Amino acid sequence: MTTMKLIGRNLSPYTRRVAIALTLLDIPHEREYLSVTADPQRGLSINPVGRVPALQISASETLIESAAILDYLMELAGPKTLVPPHGKPRRDCLRLMAWGSGVLDKAVNAIYEVRRRPAEKVHEPWRQLLLSQATGGLKALEAVEPHPWLMGEHFSMADVTAGVTVSFLRVMLPELLPPGVYPNLEALATACEALPAFKAHPLETP
Ligand SMILES: N[C@@H](CCC(=O)N[C@@H](CS)C(=O)NCC(=O)O)C(=O)O
Image 1 (spheres, rainbow, N blue to C red):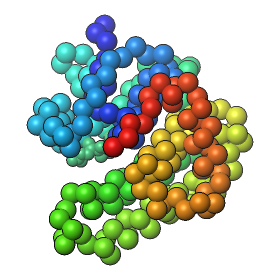
Image 2 (image 1 turned 90 degrees about the vertical axis):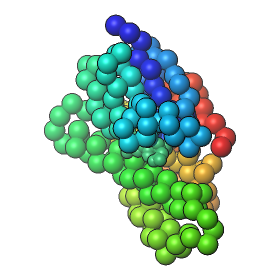
Image 3 (image 1 turned 180 degrees about the horizontal axis):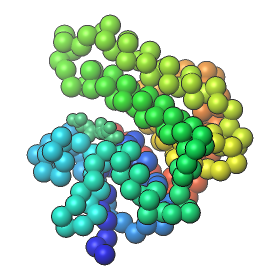
Image 4 (image 1 turned 60 degrees about the horizontal axis):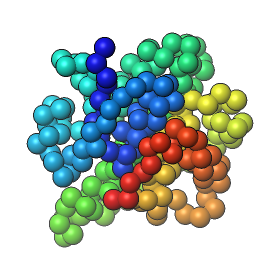
């Protein structure tokens, strides 16, 4: 089997959660630290919609969308899976993951609203709606008391997703994390960042 290649840099939280999952599952992989902002043509050549992450799993097959990539990795992982295999635990874990990735979707769009438009074309009411939607997801995650992890004693992809989300916001959109508002999430992210798998894929500064 050819070694998988994960394309995207760790500043992309969607890419980072895949990278961390690969390491947690001991799946050998190579990296291409592509910035699609810097090289949109390369982005389009690896993914028809020009986004990262992409995971090349063979010369003829490339997976896209972090949730779909993670689904494949969990299938490979078998009993080591980081998403419960069935029933309510699976539904709960997928919901928590969706809250985290939903926060990211809204936050990334709020960042693009400012970074990808001329200042006079930023539509502040739209940016505020995006921020309030991201805040909704953060509050939902904050309300889940970690014992010590979001799914209880078992560390899961819900924790990885929440951890990468909070770390990304700390760097890229700190206005979404006013001090003292999210103690559970802040502690969870700090605990995640202390894990070797997180340290193996550090967040670059932009
Ligand atoms: N739903 C996608 C989101 C991926 C995404 O938005 N990636 C960003 C980087 S953080 C990207 O490639 N943006 C470039 C663009 O959309 O033009 C996933 O989970 O993989």
